Image 1 (tube, each protein chain N blue to C red):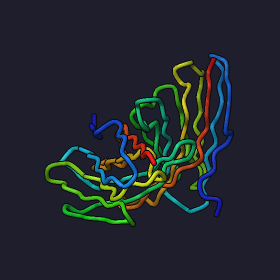
Image 2: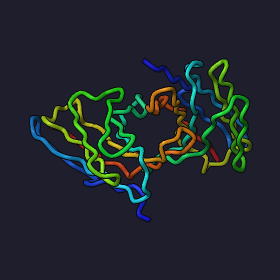
Image 3: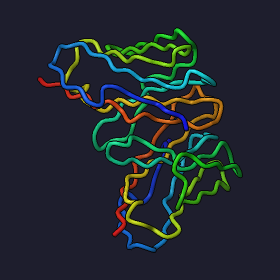
Image 4: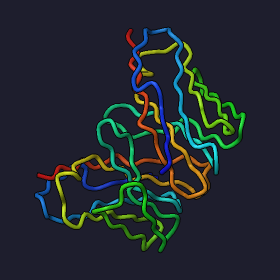
Amino acid sequence: ILNVEQSPQSLHVQEGDSTNFTCSFPSSNFYALHWYRWETAKSPEALFVMTLNGDEKKKGRISATLNTKEGYSYLYIKGSQPEDSATYLCAFKGATNKLIFGTGTLLAVQP
Amino acid sequence: NAGVTQTPKFQVLKTGQSMTLQCAQDMNHEYMSWYRQDPGMGLRLIHYSVGAGITDQGEVPNGYNVSRSTTEDFPLRLLSAAPSQTSVYFCASSPPQGGNEQFFGPGTRLTVL
């Protein structure tokens, strides 16, 4: 059974704070690591897909890093805004074609 | 492009009834999958398909059947609905390589009484 874990489960920050979350995944048979942003009452939308150890990706104020040898990825949000409030999901793809999701980190940004 | 479409948006079933959740995509994606979303459980993979004629089980396949007769369509069948299948169901598609993001449909909210 593949184990994809995210921490923390939830996070409350003030507008302007910077924050980060962790995704841990199996370090063997790595193929790709995905990050998705999921707003309430909407569908998940992709932020990043990372495939190489040491990958760093950035989209505006959001960035992510990847360490496949030790099996973790960090998602960073710089200067959080209320519109960043959402659940952030990571998903691991290994040697099979299954994309296995973590349970997510729920971020609430207070104005 | 319509992207990934799902029907119905909402459905209420009685225990023991059967139904099919429809999913279609117009992006010529080979990879399609079904997830269910339950509180505190994230998205759990039910079944997936890497192309027409090929399907495989995910993490929680029991009680569900799928088929993939065309690239566009990937229906999910509940053979005999149970209250434990009350959930929100999401269909997703992507090109087959792991380095490609998944595109999600709007979801189907299913309640089994």
